[in-house]
Image (cartoon, rainbow, N blue to C red; front, top):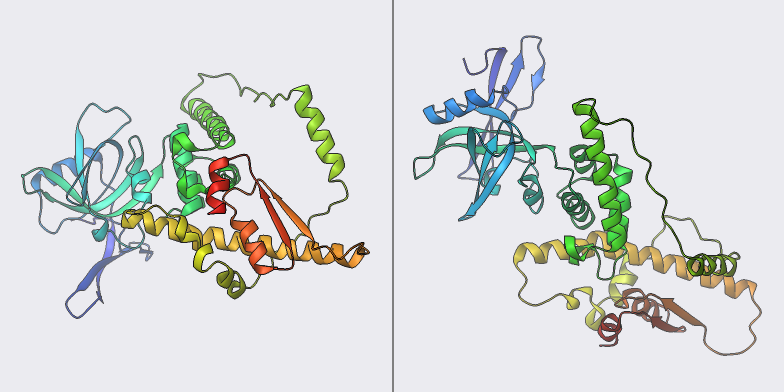
Length: 379
């Protein structure tokens, strides 16, 4: 009776350890199609509330809902789902424990985005009651269906895509209702900021990232309004950015000065062993982390260094070496002076210090308008 449209239900037992066993159900419908083990039959919101109140032992539920409220207590998140976007009306309490979620669910830092107010979720779990007797659905699987199209949410999704692997860009773009390229534009601006995207909260995001997030949010809201009904007439054109005469003159001078430089298109990286040896000891990237960070925050920042920062530095070192070798081959040396490389906008000096360590025959000068960043690099 739990799966009325299923012709066959198989029990799958997977050993996890000498004392732990995982049990999954594999559902075979009448057409002979196999369904994923965590997928049950989608219940209506009212049917799910009734099942949780009855707390039928051994039952399984799948329900869609919108997050209205969230509370955190003792390692558990208690989420109130409603059937629509309004905070009022009947709600269903969902108990989320990250350790109980299956492998297909978003985990780690992505849970904070997944359980954000106004997010739409699909929850699979078992009905029951909490210790206080509250009817609840104990989540075993969470799937993100839709994210609210507000700028803060867009920025947070982009930050998670940039700093960790918990939230794939494809899933974030699908939940927002945009294409991946739009999200990657914001990710690029976050990664280009001093300190990297892992240090930025919504209020600390660079102006370019905030502007892109607001523009994307406005477009998604207009798109949602059009899909909801004939309330808006067409799409307003985005106004192009305005530049002053001095800014335009500066752009022309920079364009003329760099007309002879041609970037080297390559996906090759400098050897990891070389970069790892250079970024050790006093130049280790993790030395810049604040003391006393929570374990989750520390892991997020270290993952950013491993997956984002180090590959970026390897690519930049390869580019700089190829560019310098090409110029030395073409130019006739006029003196025995050491070549001078100037890193404009060096930030905290990650690349300038790496270049000086990897190529000791160079003189490297780092320049940045941020005095704190220069002080940090000097130390």
